[in-house]
Length: 311
Image (cartoon, rainbow, N blue to C red; front, side, top):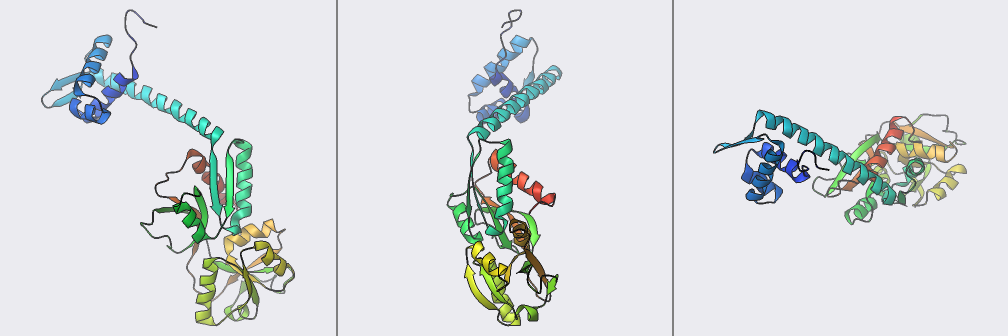
């Protein structure tokens, strides 16, 4: 509605005066806004006429705001900021109504991941999830080929090289430990030595970092007795429950698995073995800045860990 014959100020005029104030140049502002200098000049002149005050002083040295113009530009910034907030809010609502998040994760933390999905779905029921369980190296490959949006992986030391097109955000640091079932004679222990480790048979999850640890251990302390290797965690649990073998894995995976398997698994710290720290974290493609849904989901998962609820 018009008031006293004054025409409504349009948004383009606000964007133009903000850009001119920032660049102190009509020509540079026009270039940045992808319009002609004549168009931006006429638009600002029209706004000045509507308001009845000069917004800029134009000179050979540049275009600078007047005292009154500075106040107008500040109000324009506030309007544009509020408009952006409104757009962002609408975008978040729209995204949450139609979003799909594709996640890959290593098996050791799958139970915690599912709990986070369940919690997230209670607040955002329209978000669809696709979850796959893979080895860390396979997850990185799927991220590179855009088959998943984010991946929860384990990394030894600084294993993810710079320049691979990947971004890694660590959220938890752990080490390799030995796991035995609670009916094992070792279940009352908290630590185990290399010599004691060599007396146990093992069933291993088919994960490159586990194989690396076993290979390095063998090179320094001698071979371990490996009963079998499998990518099926339930096959490993069957053997562990029967107290036929122990296993080796990330300590964060045992924290997660011990609860998911009715607290039947005990972890033993390994004495006398040097090993690089292993980090649990989220990986994504460098070109993928992350959707609002993925950022919120990662924050939810991190919050559970910080509260001691990884398991």
